[in-house]
Length: 310
Image (cartoon, rainbow, N blue to C red; front, side, top):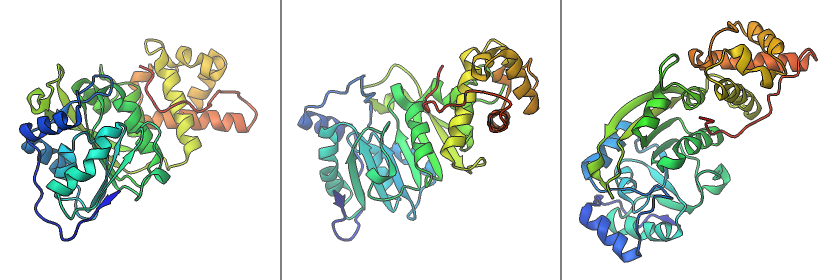
């Protein structure tokens, strides 16, 4: 349901007492399975919103709003917020929380799994993603949303610090891997800050970090093209200690065919996948597609899921 209850008034944010009160009212005990850690610090949620850069022209997609801490901070500045919440109890309470703490603001909540939600499931096309993502599914959720919501121009997500490092890592670094390359398919990726453990309830055992994606779609938005590139990335990192010639043997059909495709893409067959940027993987996938179209190769570029292999 949409909350627009007359003229907008000042937004009040949730503090530790309000968070615990709402949880007690709903009988909610944060679960590790759903990755539930609720932010209770007003300065933190305002900093996240400021870092996201959203404004009155934005329709913000928030995933996993929980009890509404970040939701309310977003409603202070965004034109509208659409929240996707998998927990029906939490989703059912959010409109009331918004009516009480952010009256007159445009808000909708959709009870759905962010791993499968699609544009037709939402009441409006989102322009920005701002979310405290459940840590156990953060990367596949982020990639799914970027892939299926081309209207998203920016994304700012809070994830486990280690995951933030992987997403923002560049070629050749120790943490560079599948998430790093796939995220860059959509645009520029950077680390955007750190979040301490003491702003959460319950307090997690791990540190958190912010990652920002500024979408440019340098390779277009065609789903088949993206699937082909992601398949090449998955294959290269499935055996990351091997050279590309060896790692891609199964994907290409044989090591010699892999070398042929790599040379066509102007990639040294002896290099390892962790040394290549996303542009190299795009060239590789396109070389494989061209070879198949010409009947001179049989590289398997079948679509895979958008999640990381490792």
